[in-house]
Length: 294
Image (cartoon, rainbow, N blue to C red; front, side, top):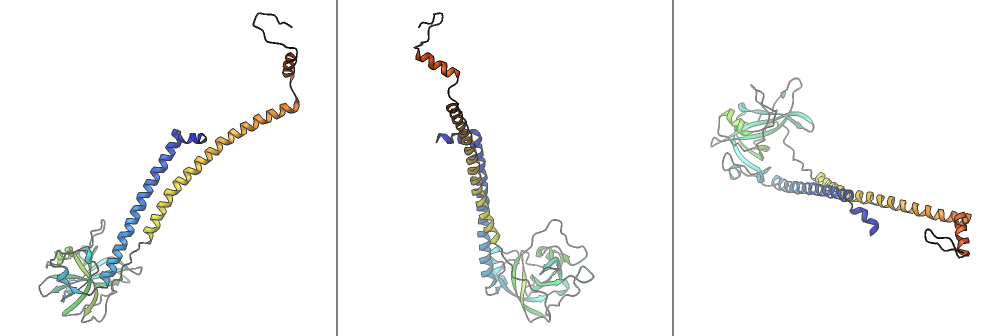
């Protein structure tokens, strides 16, 4: 073990500490990615359960105009009322299969006077203007709508409504309520699933969202591999140092053996011969200041 004592030097302990800190950071990042994966899996389970659920009355899910729970996202609700077509709004900068367009938002007023905002679907941007060429008309009169709940969208910095038009930056029922001046469900809106009676034509209905959780797993594994790689690299470097140290010792030992071998091949030098002769005649060293005796 003495051969590895250099590993306890301040330099190598510092290198080891760096590897440990790096591995700890990687472990935290791996754990965070794993948690994100668990959250996405829970979201996927909720999405699948709510998406296939049977419709329930809107008021049973949203008893108040400000009511909403994330647990009810995409849950189908049924509501009956009359579309306020003259108060239609367009949510701009929306894409469908990669094409730009708008979401068509039409307030649905119930018998109680309350308004529920219905996203009837997507229409493409016009050929010559930043607005749809046409918007499919909703059914007139009393309509029973089945829609999937969606939360009010948050404000996006840098994106604003276009003044003097019905084009909105985000789908925020509270903002629509302030413009139509009617009691409105402000925390959520509905993505149209069906209408009765049916309209002659419909915008493109919202597609089922996709929850991607595969990358979180691969990132978690990646961070774990990075942590292991840090220790593997430290082990490689310290082994290289060990080999370098012992290579120098082997070189020194080889040089000493080579010198001894050369001496044995060429025979003793003059000093060694003189020492041997003195030994044969019985010479003994004397104290300083005395004569050499025979």
